[in-house]
Amino acid sequence: MNIIVCVKQVPEIALIKVDEASGKVVYPQGPGVINPSDSYALEEALQIREKSGGKITAISVGGKETEVALKEALALGVDEAVCLDDPAFEGSDGQAIGFILSKGIEKIGEYDLVLCGKQAIDSDNAMVAPAVAENLGAAQAMFVRKVESYDSDKMVVQRTTEDGYDTCELAFPAVLSVVKELNEPRLPSLKGKMKAKKATIPHWSAADLGVDTAVTGASSPSSIDKAAKPPPRPQGEMITGETPEEIADKLFRKLRENQVI
Image 1 (cartoon, one colour):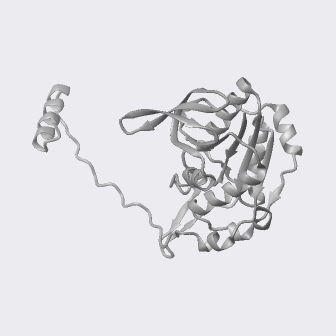
Image 2: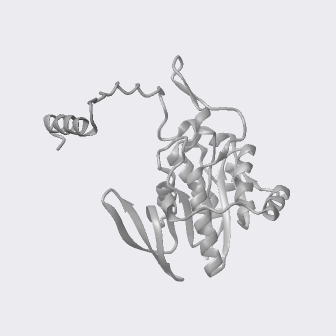
Image 3: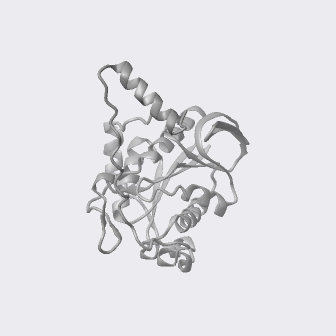
């Protein structure tokens, strides 16, 4: 099975700030880290290849700094990696990134399955995976928590819902976004790290991909007009009493008064 895993290089979330005066998000300097959700997509790809063979390619949109994430994927055991890199891609929204990735996937060639993390921790919009599927015209299932079975033509997965999960059957080619319940990501081996360090990652431009830059970057379908910190949470009420039983009784009465129970 030929698998493509979409990964993203994201900043360390604790270091992201919001400039209240300008209403803009200020990202920290430095290479950042691989998006945590993408680690589960990489692990699932590796497990599938171990069972059924095939090839895994990691793909990402970004500049030279994105090689950190792609080399981490190579260190884990991914076969190849490619970076989609063009100044016209800078500032693209989730829909535009999905379009760019789909063009990269088409250039890679034959594939059966595309795996993505459920969402990136910086944008947090979960738009990219379904946008990739839509642009490829592929079957899709989002927020997958388990792969039940697969053969040469189709796969059966459990898709997380608010009430539990749905069981879905998808014909290949298919696009999945995955959640952390799916597996436990492995750590790279020393041999893998050394191999990844020496790897040369190709960078494909908009011209290489045949991407219309009129729909990417600043021309994306959506943009952020202003960002602000969330308001502080209101001070909660402290329930006190002489004994645990008295505190529990007061809490019970409070909940009844507010029709919570």
